[in-house]
Image (tube, rainbow, N blue to C red; front, side, top):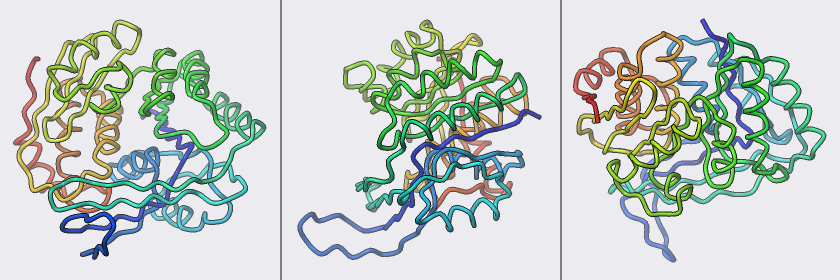
Length: 310
């Protein structure tokens, strides 16, 4: 089995509140809430651990509020190789309305100096090899330039590692130039990359082809309840999830990445992997939090998830 290293440069403590409807400028009452130590790479790692993968987690973590993360890593059996930095890991507030709209308020976190950045870069390059799968996910903390991901992807690929990359904005723009093996932008992130508003998977398809032709082996575009498309050397496929009662879309994209990574670990083909990942993400939006359902619940969603040539 491949060694999996999930990299989160900018983790967060997610405070998610579920409300009926957000009224700006007024008192808003939360129906229920959850608090999770998160960050895109950490979310991917905990899903993979639940599925049975052996996962190392690394990146940067603030010294001042690390205990919750350490408890999570121990609970999930994740190997903790995070570099500690001065300051606090950021806090993100997510207000999820009953109509599925989510408002996010992200606070600033720690600053990472160049010496610590180089330490992480060297650590990851040392770990890279043909038997390793690196999952680079999330935004960049203060002090880290957009080209950091691109340089890291090139270094890991030079050692024969497989690299999955899921980021946004300038980090995505720079990172795709390095030719990661897989990327998974959503429609909003793809729109930023191409400079045009993309609202459907049909509109996204030409740009997915362009990214593939530019050197990304597998391009996956996610579109929430529309499903996802993938463009690779095995062809073009679209997945359509069953209709579910959407509770919150928080973590759905990370769950999709985890499902794709699990499929690669198991040696499944592209279509089979897309179907599994879509089903897993579809179940996630119908529940609170980032975790794997019972196999009975997952099988129901999986059996009702369609994949076809696109």
